[in-house]
Length: 221
Ligand SMILES: CC(C)(COP(=O)(O)OP(=O)(O)OC[C@H]1O[C@@H](n2cnc3c(N)ncnc32)[C@H](O)[C@@H]1OP(=O)(O)O)[C@@H](O)C(=O)NCCC(=O)NCCS
Image (cartoon, rainbow, N blue to C red; front, side):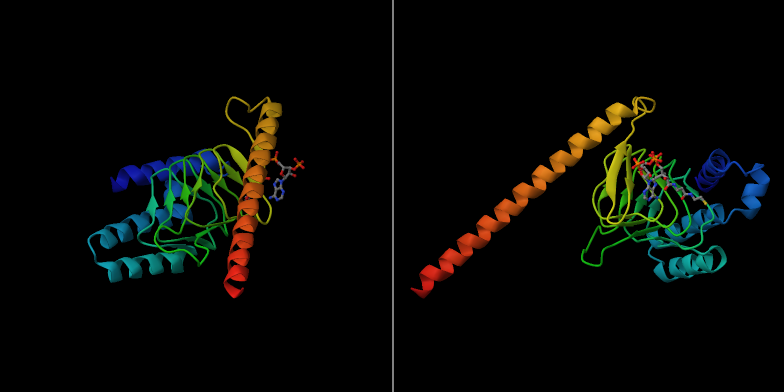
């Protein structure tokens, strides 16, 4: 299993890095591949409840690679961490195969949640340099998170999210790859739907506040 995952990681590096020359060089020099291999050992120790050993392994890997992965994070084989420095992956994060993670990415919590508080990244997602994905939601397959974006909400499959806070600017499914017009229509419809939901929620909140105020007034009388 460990070797199968290593093979998948090396394949992912070869597929995603035009500068990658051959398997041996990738295995020997790619810090993202090293970090994932160390993580699998740490994950094993974490699973058999030797948590201190798991922690020591993950912190040693961090020292050498600049990539910090909590020993409990679930990462499939075939993920590519490019450059690596400054990548942080939290305890309850899940990363599925085909995902590419660039330097400075954080898969973190907002600090307000308990339990599942780090994101689930589905297959073939691109997490660009410096992107922060914060919270226990899902980033759908094939999504692209732009460099420097801060994502705080669920991302639908094949969406491109940019900016702070992250907003959807495009949905480009494999079918609409060339016909981006349909993608743009889908984004407009989705944004309209989200706006309608937000307005509805605000209206409900205002009604609730008015009801509480009314109750308090009648109590005073
Ligand atoms: C998001 C990204 C992956 C492109 O995805 P895409 O689906 O092809 O999106 P597009 O390039 O069509 O851009 C869509 C819109 O978002 C804007 N945009 C793209 N990336 C952005 C970013 N990081 N921040 C803000 N806006 C961005 C574009 O200007 C465009 O706006 P427009 O529609 O008003 O013209 C890419 O822009 C990006 O951020 N790449 C960084 C990759 C990286 O980290 N490389 C480091 C290697 S060391």
